[in-house]
Length: 288
Image 1: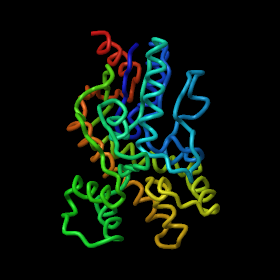
Image 2: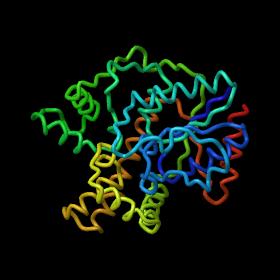
Image 3: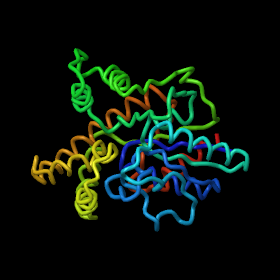
Image 4: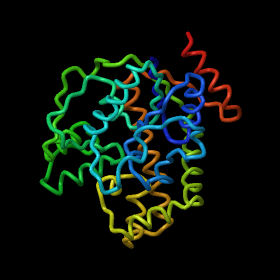
């Protein structure tokens, strides 16, 4: 059994690579994105479309309602059940997504002290983390100290992680990271957000807003929280669009920081002019 993890920021070709590798390895695909577990959150999460799956089995996509509280504990439990099942069947697995803490909790020796844990803080900026804390009490934690902000918010929610050995792998796997230079990446982000609006992001979020769904997933998800502010008449539509682009750029910076410090990633530059070159480079790496 082979487990290949594909990470990287939005728009670099993770989905396309996952399909190519799944066909090459006769593998199934497991979602590694904290937002793509939810139904109806399609455009804003850049979820794979049905016609892109090419009959390859996909797991942990669209498994929960937007109102459900699906925690990192739940993801770890469901993901490990699948990995153990496929290991027994000697079936290759591709895990694709950009939620670093979810992937680390799945693949490394993370233990939690209670089932109610909810650590979906990836999409929150440091300012938003601080604001969440100060809903309960004032704090002297510096806004740039992200680790302490998260730790404090976990304490408030009584959601401590019991870390036995978080650098110990509990599965044998390789991590591929797709990347490109920062200027190109930010240009991709801007164009991708514009395309999301062309594809119906505004209508997607409005349908959730009209149902008065204000779950944690919606109110922390990039592309959703900003448009809720627009529908609440707090900001203009243009401001919401720019805020989505800005928050996505900041999220990408945090992704790189997490993956470079917390996981052993082999980074490969995406060839946008000929993606086959990228696929072949990854396959050559995996075969060596």
